[in-house]
Image (cartoon, rainbow over all chains, first blue to last red; front, side):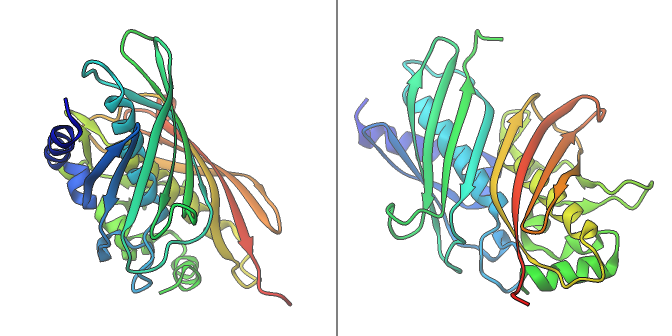
Length: 142
Length: 147
């Protein structure tokens, strides 16, 4: 499957996930195993009224979504996966009233596991808002 | 409103009613539980929390855990001191069971409350506290104004 087709399929699949729709998350693209999702700025996602700063919890949800798609993107066949654990280091507060981009790569698959790394950023990946590591369990493992 | 203003309001209101004034908490539908002696949060089931068929999105559960930890921390800080700025720095969430299409509860305990760092553990459950669906470890920096 070429990347343009895959991008279009991914984008349509995300629209059907209620929580992603609620967060305003859309698919940006995939390149060399790195998946990018975008979470549009919305006053509904702000931590404190009028601050314009997106809540950490929403950033966590963006990264969990991005990581999950990075895992699925690298599998030969579609299968349900589940997050085992995920850690976010919040490096600095996001700039107010701006969108966030989640970027993640699955860097290791075993028969039962997938290991993911990534970051959240706004303007430049050299200036990330948060760093992420996570692990997922694949079906067949217990 | 800043973290500090919200935290001050939360402390004044005493039992976390003010969680309902936070936009992200409203988006999740999180409310504070007023029953019993222990402070906990409830995230009533709603369709917008779904991440995959029949399951809550892990990010929504993580958001609930973080809100439980932050409110528990604010309520525990000494009342005779100015509130510090509260900044979560590392948050690790373990997902243990899938979150089903029903109400989710969360409560947090403070492992250690220091001058500069607070360590908290938050747990989320649906049927029974002893059967958690997820738990979070949060390390939070308390930034105090220079005196």
